[in-house]
Image (cartoon, rainbow, N blue to C red; front, side, top):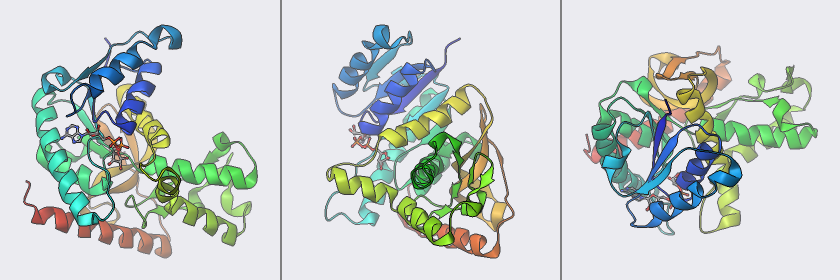
Length: 312
Ligand code: APR
């Protein structure tokens, strides 16, 4: 039987995820947005590329949550981008209200689905989706670590002039300035990165990774990244739909791991049909652990702001 994925938010990220899922023949897709016509037009356009691209699944666009019924996976990209003059707190409050209403609707029609959140500020939005849905922590997961790691891997590949496919790297922590790239766990075809590059060079790549999202916004001016974010979300969708149990860095619910509780943050997890099936606890150095705790403190600050809104 074919899988069904609903993508809420038919903007840049959501529509590109729809395209990638359709082209990979992973599932039938329902693309849902609050704007009339936009999801219908984009879905029809993607679907009409099927004969050329070689896929046979359905791609529908809708404004009605009834069309999302019985999805195996819900991907939430709905939200607004930060506008000039808008504070982080205002963005958090606006997107939190959107995530709350979207989560209530999708869980009503697909109570068994795994929920994958992409909307920023990521870790606090996925935390909210978890609380509102009433689902166990492992069934609600956030996309950030694969994107941040993919940026880090790309920069390493460019620096060493080797194929990006040879590079493995792990970025943990909250999605933002305090993310924690872990050079000790990066390797090039199995060779530790720390044997191939001097610490100063590695540090430059780490800094560029931390600023990866801002670098794209700096070019685009009026929008944020969506090709790499959509690719990262689709890698997670594939792991969940095909139950392939990949080890991937994802924003996951922590209950004591790394000494942290009741928080979502980027962790190495095993991703399968049940969502986050296991969280891998690495033996971090005191310095790495300290960076992770600093990152957790930032996420906790955002959760405090969220709690003030009394949305759940
Ligand atoms: N219900 C459904 N859709 C909504 C709602 C809502 N309540 N509110 C907003 N949307 C839709 C908008 O109409 C828009 O089509 O969400 C879409 C967001 O699309 P874009 O503005 O193009 O944003 P995009 O670049 O796709 O980013 C979406 O992903 O990576 C993150 O930071 C990014 O939080 C942002 C999200």
